[in-house]
Structures are given as C-alpha cells and as structure tokens.
Image 1 (tube, rainbow, N blue to C red):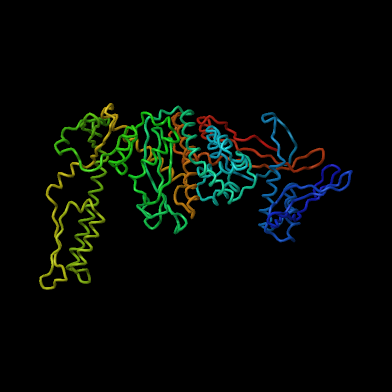
Image 2 (image 1 turned 90 degrees about the vertical axis):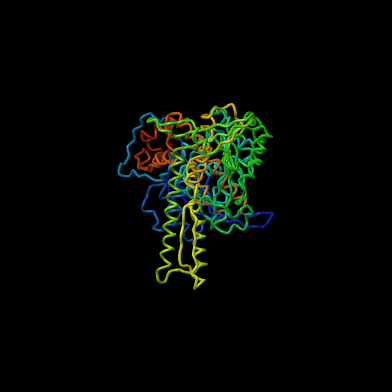
Length: 616
C-alpha cells in the first residue's frame, strides 16, 4: 500500500476485455490500477497497461505487491518467483519512465539526507556505441526524411533501433529485439515506440525496403553535401551471403560460388557502388548464382535514375570478373570512363618485362611497383607488376607445387606397398582429382601412369617431368594489365586509382564482419532483402563515424571504437531519502562518467559527452 499525504492508494491487477466489432474477436489485457479515496468518494485510476501476460490469476496480487515493493523500496514484499520478479521489474521500469522528470539544475549542488547503505544500482544499459550511432543518424536527418515520406513517428524509433542494433549487436531481428529491451538504452535516445515487439521489427524492415531507392538517393546527396565529397570515382563489386535452411520461399536463393566456401548453402548476391571516399551510392540484391558480368548495366541505370547529377565525368573502377566486353561497350555508350583489369590473353610480350619503369619504391630503394604503357587514340593498356603480389603468387604456387609433388610421391610409393591402391583406373582418377585441387601446380608437370603388361588392370609406375618453358611463365608472377579510356592520366595515377578498389573490398569486409550480413536466416524473399538493406544502411552510419574520426587522425575501425564505448552506461540509482513526509524511496536515472578515451571519441565526432540528462 502506497501512502501519499491524506490519499490512500491501493494497487492491484484486473483483467479488461475488449471486443472487435468487425470480427467479433475478443482481446484480454491486464491493467495495473489503483483505488483512490478522495473527498468526492473512491475513484479508480489506470497506472499501467500490462498487456497480455501469461500468468495465473492467483498470481495477480503477488505481482501487484512486487511492483509496489519496487516502487516503495520494501524488500519484504518481494516474491521468490523469478518470473514474477522479471515482470514486476519490467513494469516498474515503465512506470519510472512515465513518471520521471528531468533534473533542471544539472550542475547545481543539492544536498539531501539519505541512507548510504540503501544505495543500489539497477537497469544498467549500454549507451556509448548507441550514442555515437544516434548522433550520425540525426546528422544525416534520417528521422526527418522518414517522416517526409510518410512513415509514422511511432515506427521511426523501431527503424532506428534496427539499424543501430546492426551496428552495436549484429544478429537476427529476434536477437535485436532482446538487445533493445534488455541490454541497450537505445529507446531512451530515440524515444519509446508505441508497442515494441519482434513482429513490429519485421514490419519495420518491410517498410524500409519499400522506400529503399528513396532513402539511398537521399543519403547519397546528403552525405555529398555534409562531407563535401568529390564523387569523381565509383567502385563496383559484388559479394554474397549464405542462408541457413532450404529457402524454398525465396526464388532468389540459389546455389553458386560462395565467397565463404559455404557450398552447402544457398546464396544471395549483394552488388554495391561506392565512391572514392568509401561512401555507398547504391546497392541491389540479385540471385545467388548471379553472373558478375550481367549486373553492371542494371546497377548503373539505377544509379543514374536516383542520382542524375552523378553521371557527369564519372570513372567506374572494377575487377576482371565484371569487365566483360559488353560492359565496356555499355560504359562507352553511357559516356562513363573506366579503369578495369583487362580480360583475355596478355597483349604484352616477355621482352616487355625488361622495359618496365618504377613508379613506387621503398625507403631502401627496392622496387615495389613497375609499369609499362601502351596507348592508342582512345585507350591505354598498362602492364603492372607488384612485388607484393609477385611474392604472394610465388609463395602460393610453391606451396601448391610442394603439396602436388608430395601427393604424387605418396601414390607412387603405394604401388610397392601391400594394401595400397594399385588399380590403373583408380590411380588415374586420383591424379585427376589432385590436378583439380592444385590447378596452378598441375600445369607445370606432365604425369605418366604406366600399366602392367601382364595385369592390365594394375599400374606399375608413376613418373612426372616439368614441362619446358614453364620456368619462363613464372616471370609473369605478380603481373596484371589495366585497361582505361582515361588517357589524360599518367601511369602512376592510373595504378593508384585502380588500387583504390580495395575500398569496396573493405566495405564488404565490414558488412560481413561487423554488420551481420552473414548468415541470413530469413525464409521469405522480402525479409531476406530487407535484412541486407538494413546492413547497408548501418554501413552508411559506420563509414560516417570512421570518416569523421580519420579527420582527427584516428584510424581505428568501428569494431575497436564500439568496444571502447561499450563501457559507457545508463543506469538507475535507488536510495532511501529522509523528507518532511518521512522516509521515501527515490530513484535517479543517470549516465556513467565517460572515460578519457571515450571523451576523445565523442569530441572527434562533435557530440556531447553525456548523452542524456539526469531524470528523477
């Protein structure tokens, strides 16, 4: 029982029934109410709608007493039932949120007489990483844009939570819902949604996907204005995500070449265009077995539609897998410049390797990158040889060659040992599989299997010899040819522009490792596409954070920043305070004091150190 002056409040739970006139469906809810004795007689007032709780009616009184006990700070009223405890604490927290008010005099001293032994902390929630992400969300004006396109203000907190959750605690929508409810203070930053539930997250994802093109067009323009981006180069590439399950309800889910070596799973392909600063311009989801060369035209046309102003004097950079002859022709017709890896046979001769000039060397004078240029009126071919790439390819070939020869020796030795394979056909099959496993090394050797003259079904010898001229081929290790219509660029500029393709590789790596792109658990096509788009939206925020930090010479990744900020929390302090009315239980909601390194990050991002004010 709660006593306030001359008014006596009795708290209890009652069941409320509501009818849907259209469907005759009956809904039952539990209300936490209070009976108030006033000069005008007894009155009943709703404290909190508890919704539909799965507890027996005989536990209603126990739950109401527990809630009252938390509000009054009376442990003797607490229930030993863990489920009642969980429900009561959740209800009490909602009451605290409804009745709390900001402390106006944030920095003014205010001395009160309290029982220090009664001080306890509760409702500890993460707020550091969420604060960084929320600040970028606001800077990008995403809430305002969602309102502009007709999204309900009650849904926007759920949408932001979905995106920020992908940054702070990547996982499924069910995992994200639990994270928002039990671990994070995200809703204190965004405002509480009307009725947060796991199903509301799925509906919010569907809504995001519906407005995908509008949001990507808006973000592309907003980031260009906000960060003064040049937007003279565009990088294009694809990656894929794998599914858990059969994915029978998703026609896009197909088996293909998995970049995670998950040949046992169906795939979904994500294509992405980014600029030279690493900001995403456009994304699209394709079938899991999508051929890389067939996606470029679709992506460019979609980008031109969403950003007509971006089509002027642009250069597309892409790898050999996408640089087909038809794609080059398409770019020429659309008047887009290009720098690509040349497909097909090598147009240079072995003697050309002696004519290459150095464009990059280390402090010791050792050659790191060499090039040789061949140019006509419209195109330039640039033969490049990288020391790092050369060493990597040589190392890989040496390892393959070693494993290839070791296995051949093992097969040969088996012909003389009891119980080992000697069948001629089986030996040929084993060597064929070995060649498939080590194709580069296999090309270097001729292998001969000799049959037994008496027992034709058996083999008696395995011999191998290195092919002539293969030593000369090794001189091409580390070499590749770039093809471009940017004849205005010098050799070094062409090479340096191409190696910026690593920016999109880093973007994909970030999506896979930090933003929950893999695996995808959704069975429906729309939900799977929405899952990928949420990761792309999260990438916009992540890259903006990293970009702003780099401007302050902080080159740490979001994964590191997230870990540092994870110890900044929001919590409730409860204590017994002596007042003129007697001893009262008081609560105050505060943010922990940020550590010096956390303050440095907040300063670099241009945001306040204390995310939220105190509330009592």
